[in-house]
Amino acid sequence: MELKKYKMFINGEWMEPSSGEYFPSYNPATAEPWCYVAKGSSEDVDRAVQAAHQAFLHSEWASMTYTERGRLVRKLGDLIAEKADELAQFESLDNGKLIREMRGQLSYLPEFFYYFAGLADKIHGQTLPIDKKDMFAFTTREPLGVIAAITPWNSPLYLTTLKLAPALVAGNTIVIKPSEVTSASLLELMKLVEEAGFPRGVVNVVTGFGDPVGSTLTSHPLVRRVAFTGGAESARHIVRNTAENFAQLSLELGGKSPNIVFEDANIDNAAMGIIAGIFGASGQSCVAGSRAFLHVDIYDKVLQKLVDRVEKIKVGDPFQSDTEMGPLATEAQLERVKQYVSIGCSGGANLIHGGKPPENLDKGWYFEPTIFEHTDHKSRITQEEIFGPVLSVIPFKDEKEVIELANSTDYALAAGIWVSDIAKAHRVSKAVRAGIVWVNTYRSISPIAPIGGSGLSGYGREGGYEAIHDYTQSKVVWVNTSTEPIPDPFIMR
Ligand code: NAD
Image 1 (tube, protein in one colour):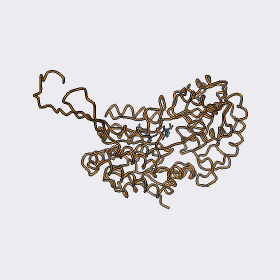
Image 2 (image 1 turned 90 degrees about the horizontal axis):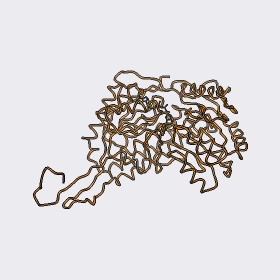
Image 3 (image 1 turned 60 degrees about the horizontal axis):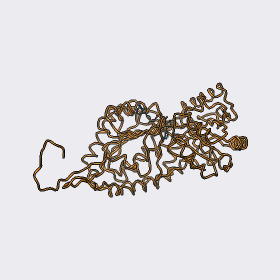
């Protein structure tokens, strides 16, 4: 059977890549290609950015009111709601995540479009109580221009939406480069962008690899903001690229997030939270709770609960309704996880569960849920992001010690705290270095709540009310209301 071929979506048209080349996209559950995707070039990027620039300046998009743009974004949300199930299937096929999880994520996605659509007509400036007589001054908020969005493979449409929805309601136009591993769902989404009636060139997709597509896009002179989600290495390239065009930049990168269990916690919930944090999505989550700190008084009990549950985790076909962990998204990711496991073993950590691909699955990029026990918190596997199902369990004696341990990596993205003492919950939430803190829960998301981190986890926030400001800039207008002649022109007024 001939495999499906995805063209790119540029200026409202489905376009062949200028190179004429396509590359395969693999199903991680079988390790076989299931479709082909256009291999974009610098020329294709330029076409897309020029189209977005023209749409920003001259299309009907440019003259629409915020209310009208909000209405279009809401319509796109409605269309996604109708097609959520289908879109979820493309995502599971491409990245191997559980169909259950992707269905949940995709059916919640419209809420992000509705939330930002609701903000569209609340983008306003201020009248300034200016300290000069005969002057009236006010600010407005204007869109920036062409936005470049670059996404990874773990939650393709969710991570795109965090950029696309606020960018559009603010009146920008956008060029999106999805991960070369998971392009299909975004191209399927473009059919809904067409159906919703966005003017040509407002939303564009160029598929292909980091180099040249990502690098040309992020250094393009007409790009005004780059919204990136991915790894630190690519982020470093992008920071250098934006030295060319001075585009604003947000970086949502990785993490080494702590999940801290105090002695008074509800231990059953804590164990579930730790499992959700690291084995959900097979650990391929920026907020993966890859370090579990357990208070010494409850250490053995919680560890036993973890091991008991992890032994029962069903690893396998992500399309089966009872599967709990699917494969890793790429063969390279599987190799990376294997390598970290061998680093852990040779570095003196105690492997207490997993550590290898499951023996009952003969194809696909699967790995067993893996648990290491540590006495030393300085090893590479407790410091570096693995992005796979590998948990480090570490004991602690008191609050001060665990805060120090939790804060002792270069990442600062998320943290989980399992505790009953409300005062302690607040103290530790404040002390822990992270952009997101979950107390007695983990991996909760909402369009209303911002996400983002600091240090090696990047900078900037996505989601929430403030995101809309990142996609606009203020303009101040001064109006001289005096009838008097302008005085001395050689001094500032
Ligand atoms: P990656 O950095 O390899 O790729 C991400 C994107 O960047 C891809 O589209 C890729 O083609 C592109 N890219 C690569 N080199 C580039 C360059 N020189 N210029 C421009 N673009 C370039 O990341 P990945 O392996 O796809 O994803 C895993 C990483 O993403 C992990 O570190 C994970 O923690 C992070 N992540 C972060 C969040 C968050 O919200 N903080 C969410 C999901 C994933």
